[in-house]
Picture 1 (cartoon, rainbow, N blue to C red):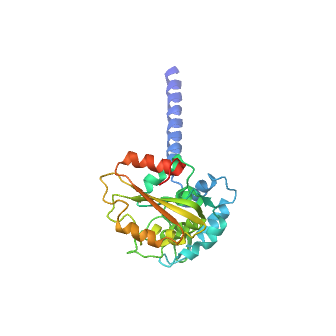
Picture 2 (cartoon, rainbow, N blue to C red):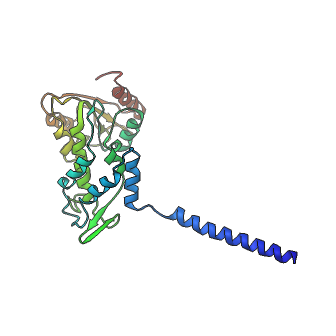
Picture 3 (cartoon, helix red, strand yellow):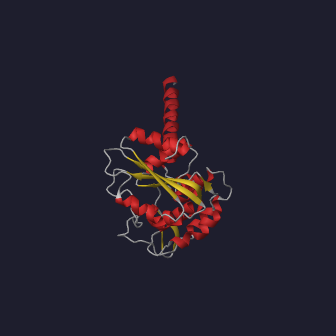
Length: 263
């Protein structure tokens, strides 16, 4: 009889373990849906209106042809989450995202990805479908223009980049890729949108820093940087610094942003 009761108890324990294991497995394995991810990230900025921001955001692309979502379709979203002036804090980048992110994390300077909307949607993919109120994260147009130019993700980042540039004031910094054959590309988001919205006297100066992981292909005399200077609004002071050593470049950028020396 004693052995029978032991067997019953052991069996019950095994059943409980199995049930808990399955339940925990389902909980751990359950992937957040896009809306939950959006709201959770938004709320890290201590906003109480993230659900309303979500509604405004989703209206830009739901029930739409994914190749007809324009920058302007996100105008109301920008109004729902406006940026405060970024005086002497705006940090632009082109083909140097990881480096810019690490610098921004160490300083008070801000990249677009440190703003509410930039942080909320960083690294995410989304789109809608005609006749559906759902948000999809697969089967969406790619970032590249070859798929379609006016797609939900590309148009959002273009519009958010425009808003970021509009908020910039005072001295700004741009981190460009010294390993690239063309550190300044007029077709990049930085070259085609952001730089065109930097206006004097709101913006006083731009410091360009070329950063490299390898032996640099470009320095401050590169022809594309002449194009950058020509693209700047008249009156904005331009300066450039290049350094081929990754660590040294990090130190230079850090000191520049902290204001310990000027170019």
